[in-house]
Image 1 (cartoon, one colour):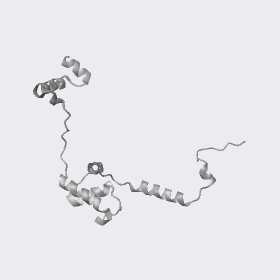
Image 2 (cartoon, one colour; image 1 turned 45 degrees about the horizontal axis):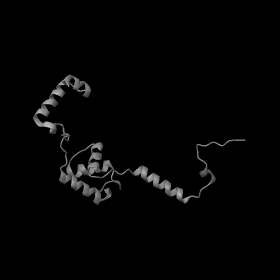
Image 3 (cartoon, one colour; image 1 turned 30 degrees about the vertical axis):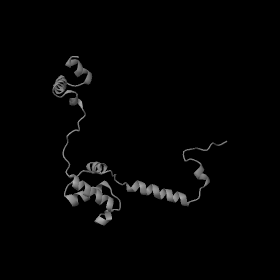
Image 4 (cartoon, helix red, strand yellow; image 1 turned 45 degrees about the vertical axis):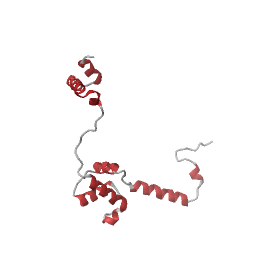
Length: 140
């Protein structure tokens, strides 16, 4: 197959195909193994990441003089800033939590849902509960 033809099939430039061919000549099939993309190094080294994980797992935010009882991304960001002097964006904090095997806690929705369930369990059922709100009554 001609490199121009391969470039059309893979929707890349011809020079990319020539680079692939060169890599294959130099490294064989190993040239096409999937490699981890090299990105910007983390601002927190592994040791600090381990410290952060133990802080989050071992304590609640109020023990660290933070205003809330659940670990939100905002509070984790604040701990990182205070403890390590590093500032992260909220999406980056979400990525850090995911890398640590954790997830941010979303208090408002969960607390509201739990409160609603508790209220529903306390009150007796009525006839109105049996009729969906979207249904309309047919008059005869």
